Image 1 (spheres, rainbow, N blue to C red):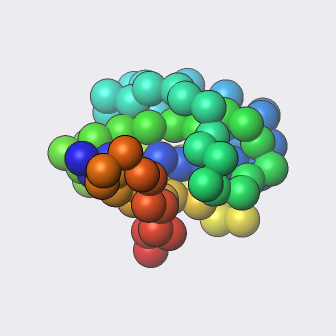
Image 2: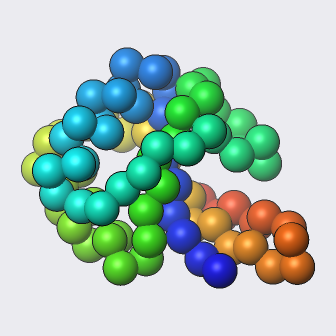
Length: 86
């Protein structure tokens, strides 16, 4: 199984990004994976099919790049493997 998550530097960025992305793509909120170190405990999850709309929405909104990080998450045999995306 593969999916994407966006982690954030702070909770404010996570919540405002959630509101913005909900107008563009099918997303969900989840706790930040313990395999990923981030400043905020809230992450946004979305499927690979939503990658293009999410990226377009993020670019149109101009959230500062240092405020978030996108990871591609692969699950295999019950283990989680995060890889920074872009």
